[in-house]
Image 1: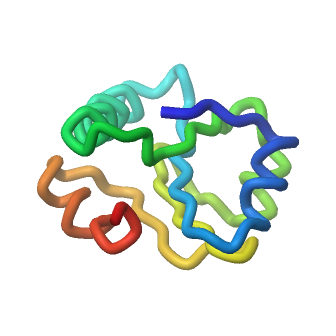
Image 2 (image 1 turned 135 degrees about the vertical axis):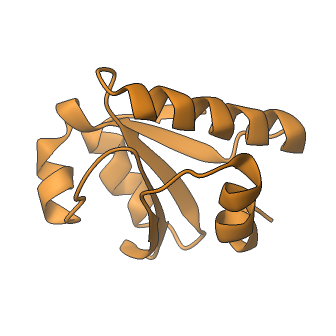
Image 3 (image 1 turned 60 degrees about the vertical axis):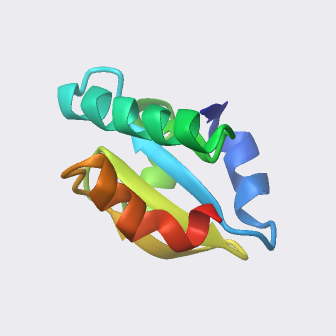
Length: 103
């Protein structure tokens, strides 16, 4: 997983490709479970597919993109969020929901 901060997140969001950003907090237990799922997916795909943004260090982005809670996966294309996921039931569930953006 590639860590990003508020500054390089804005630059990344403007790119034409799909980018999946994992918004989390280091104080969130559910975020740690979700991160393990995403790490497993990256290990299986043998490629880093997710960007990680610490919500506590980017309150401006939390507000701007109306992120309701953490953990959250947001798919960006052309600077706009096109998909959001707040529930991480299982690895197969995450793959089903995010599969089109991972290929």
